[in-house]
Image 1 (tube, protein in one colour):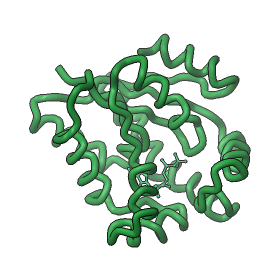
Image 2: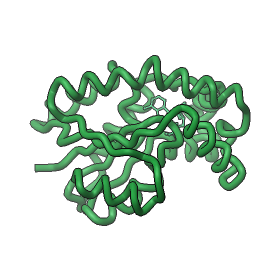
Image 3: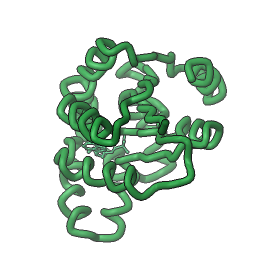
Image 4: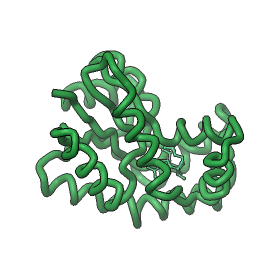
Amino acid sequence: MTKYYILFGPPGAGKGTQAGTLAKDYNLKHISTGELLRAEIAAGTELGIQAKELIAAGRLVPDTVVEGMIKSAFETVKGYDGFLLDGFPRNISQAKDLDDILAGRGESVTAVISIMISDEMIRERIKHRAAIEGRADDASDETITNRIDTYHSQTEPLIQYYKECGKYHEANGTGTIEEVYARLKAIM
Ligand code: ADP
């Protein structure tokens, strides 16, 4: 049975950092919708052109766009025990669509693992990352504020959604990378 883990958490919680190691340790394919979108932008595709402004504004791209990328990964990726989804789903509609996509494959979400930090720490981490990675959506205070607002209004309700089906697990995201990793491993 293929595993479908969701790595959840606010922007800047450290999902990308932790996902790389987790995916390796558990033979999972790491899929970051944010990274896939940035690759489309870098390649100058039609999809990338559409996504660029929304991302720069701190808003979500249309559900159909990310769901298309996710579906195509599920269909084409082979040789792993499962998937580690990072940045998807990001609203209730995407979560419901994911359930449908998996049901169509006779499968379901294995578990949601959430990395939790405060809004204050989101800002600190994103500012620090802006200096290192140079991501356009990390650069301005206004965009960061919009991403935090988008998280609270659209993404946070997923916590309740996954709690109701008994799949939600939360780790404290403060401390060193190694400390957070140990908490995630204990949950896995
Ligand atoms: P972060 O975790 O720091 O928010 P990501 O790399 O996951 O960064 O995402 C960057 C941006 O890409 C998001 O702010 C959003 O605009 C877009 N994006 C990523 N995943 C999704 C998704 N599942 N649905 C809609 N938009 C998304």
